[in-house]
Amino acid sequence: MQPAFDFTQWPPLISNKDRNALQYRATSYALAHGLLYLPIGVQPPKLTSAIHAPISLFPTPFPRDQFEQAQRLQSIYNILYSRIAMDIEFLDQTMGTEVGVGQVDEFTGQLWSGWRDLRERGLAQPLHLGLFRSDYLLHQRDSELSLKQVEFNTISSSFGALAQKTAEMHRSLEISTKFYTNSAHLTASNLPPNHSTSGLVEGLAAAHAAYNVDGSRILFVVQTGERNIFDQLWLEYELLEKYSIHVVRRTFDELAHQVKLSEKDFALIIESPDERPVEISTVYYRSGYTPDDFPTQTQYQTRFKLERSKAIKCPSIPLQLAGGKKVQQVLTEPGVLERFLCDEKKYGSQGVFSAQALADLRTSWMEMWPLDLDGDAGVGQARGRALELVLKPQREGGGNNVYKEAIPEFLVSLPPRERPAWIAMELISPPLGLKNYLVRAGSEECVETEVVSELGIFGWSLFGEGKVINEKEAGWLVRTKGKDSNEGGVATGFSVLDSLVLVD
Image (cartoon, rainbow, N blue to C red):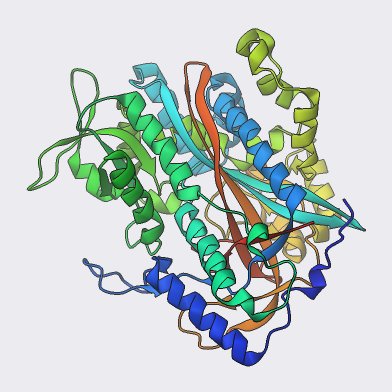
């Protein structure tokens, strides 16, 4: 598309006085409406204080047609990754310890090996729940703008609730102040609604309903000292108030002493001191995506015990493995996408996608290849094109990738045996000159800075035994960071929460 909108002219001009007033209104709204974080530092046993989450002062301009395209793609991605998670042979070949990434990536290998052993012993629950997020950047090449996928997340896809709060904050600023500007773009009709809290909770409620045991609860597996607790609590409140579903929050260390499996049917029971035992319908992981969550074998064994149980997992181990960067790269190889989206014998005529749908997915991908491609060819290609690449391992959570100038030295230090754990991906080139004001708690002044904004589209899928039972697109997220920051995680301190103003 031709970029009719001039990104270099954003944000609109605003006086210091009006900017300060806007910042006051934004932070006041955040504090009053639960757009919150816990302060940095060791968290006390009981919550005593909070700070507003990092936010942008203005919403970020985004082409309307590209936003709508990302929403349309989500349903295809929901089904694609559901089918990947049910294809044992594919995951064994791609992520296993015998011929896959698990040979050289210890974390992946541990998860796959545990899953393989459980398959041999028998798994009690055939259903899986995925709460997904597909992340995108705008890519500009010459005068053309296109939508390009950064990654697809299958575990702990966070910030759904706070993303909705941020969009509501910007809508409130438009109603109350018109952003103190005369911008023709900053109108209510250009600020898209976001219902990511209810969208994600609908998926959790669908899994709970499929489990269908009166009095059962949903388990949130969380990290110790979690600062992003309010993003989780809004989901918990929605589950209770809309669906009358109670939530239990536990860390892996707590679960190691409290989890029991019923001898009769492997029902997952939480037995806590001074509380009655409760049966768990659904295990929702807001941890478990990084090796840091598994410092000893005890945490792995707890994860495997949960996996063995009758509770529906979000995600199951195969669905977590499906979200690996290696899978993202393998999908770009000839015929792989067709394996999952065009097999009429396996999925029926209604489960086959059109050539246009596949083309739309492929158009959203950047070039990728494995570092172990054809002996030394993959590394040689990465070395020669280092300034236009990012190298990605099989990790989630931010801070793990290697970019541009750092690539040649990294390749020298990378043992050849570890190359299969890494993929090379062509860097996305967002429009230059886009600016915004980034507001962080404790800073009295917000400074205008050049930024890059990443769009995430949420979705959910309930699936098992070879078929997708239900799936939906479930809202969106925008994270904005300074242009010179390579990483993009809000929880890791790189980004702020943002929303969209749609432009034509």
